[in-house]
Amino acid sequence: MTTAVRDDSALEVRIAPTSRRLDLRTYTQILNEVRMSLEEVDRTALPVRSPRLRWAIEDMTMESYVRIVLVPATRPAKRTLQSIATPLHGFVNGIDALTESPRIPPFFSERTVARVGHIGKHIGPGGVEQVAVTSLNGDRHTAVVDEGTVNNAAQAVLPAKSAFSSVTGTLDVLSHTKGSAPRALIRDPRTRHAVRVAAHSEHSEILRNAWGRRVVASGILQRNSEGQAVSLQMTDLEILPDSQSQIDPADILGVNPRITGDLSTAEYLKQVRSA
Image 1 (cartoon, rainbow, N blue to C red):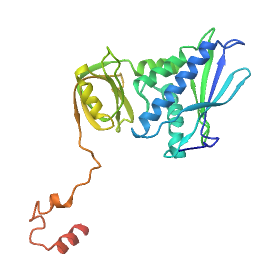
Image 2 (spheres, rainbow, N blue to C red):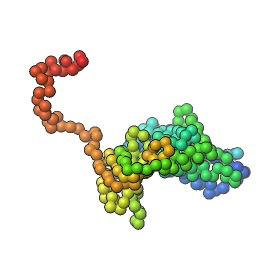
Image 3 (spheres, helix red, strand yellow):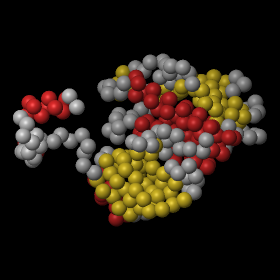
Image 4 (tube, one colour):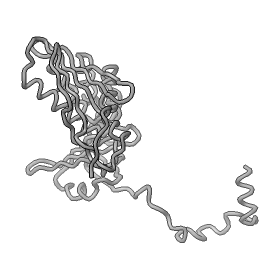
């Protein structure tokens, strides 16, 4: 079941060309990178099994710049308006953060950062002057992709050091085509960004079994100059127990019968509560 989407659940993309005519390939490539970035931010920010959004063009105008308004084609019944706004705000805020420093923003992966660089590669003579994105939710926050943004994006995913280490998080976005090594993303709840994982063919089955689960992946971890995890060449994967699983009281009943000492249960609880 799907429902209509509010008008303010939208992203405005403005492309300012350097000449009167915008090259068709430039236009389509920029728009495609924006769409795929929104999808990636959505996957990184929200739980693995969340219904995903499809994006559509609601409005388009051409003046001294090209203006495109993207909206979700429909809203899945299980998606709230707030959850729909998450990829919009996350994408715009991420570009804003990359304009300020060469750090991987929250809800971004190495691949999403690279997409910002791909958008910016069109900036220059014969291309575009700038690309601006605005979340039309709430305060209409705008971020601009310029040369500084592109330089910071390149630095953010450039490996500065590598060492054997591990990454803990939720395994998501599996990819394994014939003749290539399997790849995945691990969403780290501490850093709120996703780490790209490259594995060996023999890891295919355990990766499939671990999809959507909390895992700890070990291997050669590459970090950027800011110390952020960029990618992992995985050698081992362990599925962690579900942190939300309930403990049966019967399993722990009587495990430490002397925990209250010589006090009764009521006396012990009174002492704890007054501490």
